[in-house]
Image (cartoon, rainbow, N blue to C red; front, side):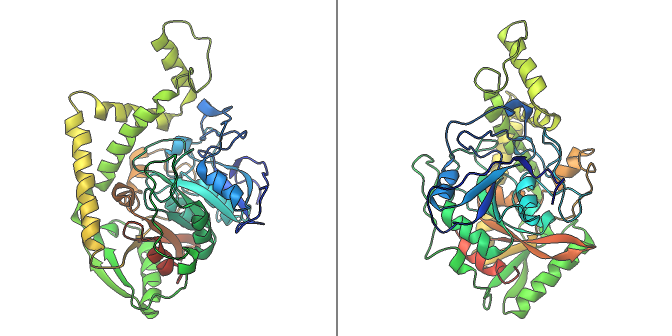
Length: 423
C-alpha cells in the first residue's frame, strides 16, 4: 500500500547465511543502528547519520537468514504516541489512512499491517510497540527488560525501553523473539530468561486452566466501544477454559505522572550528546560554545523533543529533584510491588491496550497532555520492567482494538500462550 510513509529508508539487505528466518522480510525501526545504513531516529538532528556498526538484534537477524527491507518511520527519538512528530512527516494507518497508526513505532506496525514486511522490529519505552500494534490490528510484544539486548538502540530513556517484535500472528512474533532474545556481553543488563524450549512453541492456543486478572483501574475512563470489544475477547478466552477475575492495583493511578517525570529526566541526559560536535549537524554559528550548542539544538530538534528535554531538566534541577524525581522513583517501586502481588495470585493480567480508538491525524498534537494520558494502560508495564503483548481483540466502528496481556518477569511463554488463543 503506497502513501503510508511507513518507511524512511528502503534498502534491501540480504543475509549471507541461512537460518530460521530465511525467506522472511523484516522492517527495522529507525532508532536501531544499522551499519552503513542511515539511522535518523525520525529527527532532522540525525538526518545524515550513518552508524559504523550493527545493533546486536541486527546481527542476530543476519545470522538467522532474515532479509532487512528498510528503516521505518517513528516519532522523533521515540517521543510520541501517534508517529506524527517525525521530522519526515506522519505515517498513516493502513486500516484508515485518515487516522494515526499509533507510536512511536508506527512505521513498523504499519509496514506489517500493510503487508510491506513479514515482520518488524520496534522499541517500547512506554507502550511504543503495543500502542501501534493495537491501532493497526497486528501483534506486538514488549519483552521483559533485559531479555533483548539494547546494544545499538539509540537511547531515549534507558531504564524503561527495549526492543521487540511485530507480526500478524502471535506465533510469528514469538519466532522473531526467539531470534533476538538472549544474553549479550555488550549489554550488561541482559539476562537469560528462557524457561524451556522456544517462545514460538508456547503459541499452542490452549488456555484451559489459565487465570486472568483484570485491573479495574485500567478500565476507568476507557471508551465504551473499546471496553465492549475487550470484554468480548475475554469471554472468548473464558469459553476456552480460562478463568477471569477482577483485581485492583491502587498504585496505577500514579503511573502516568511517574513515567513522564522519569522518562523526560532520562531524555534530558541522553540527548545532551546531540550538540553539533559529537552528533548532529555542524553549523557556522558565531558566538561562544553555549550559543552554538543552543543554535544546533534549536534547529535540529522538534517541538515535542524540546518540551521533554526542558521538563526533564527542570525535574532534575537543584531544588526540585526531591520534589519530582525522587517521588517518581518511589511511585515506580510501589507499582512494581503491586504487580508482583497481583501476579502471584493470577497467571496474567489483561486490559485494553489503548483506552481509545485510533485518533484522526492532527487531533493529538493539539493537546499534548491528552496524548500523554492515553498511555495510561501501557506505561505501568515499563515502570515495572515486565513483559506484555498486544493482540487483536476485534473491531469497533471498523477500527482495531487491542487486548494487552501482562506477565511476570521473563514470563513471555505465558503471555504468548494466552494471546495465541486470539490470533
